[in-house]
Length: 88
Image (cartoon, rainbow, N blue to C red; front, side, top):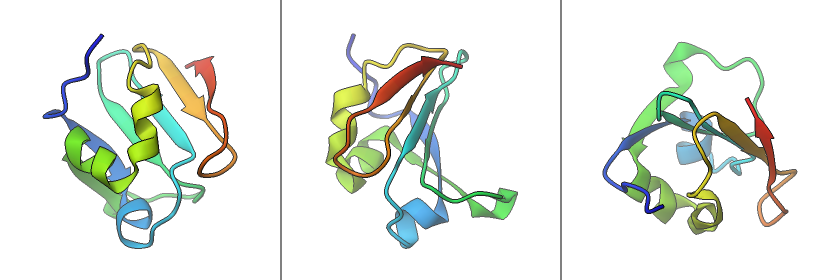
């Protein structure tokens, strides 16, 4: 399966502007993607939308989970650690 790099994905200002490592990825059953850091209590104003291509430029290690099926999530303890895949 080849990912469409032109789709938009959801992330946070913490990931993009404060360089929080991405430790949680969700590929929702409707096809939406979320890329989140370690922050709790996120608010709507923390959300940002960018293309999947831009997300890969921000964190090239995400290439390893682009085949994550819809309805699955991936977590890791920190950047460079192994992804753990679970069903949502």
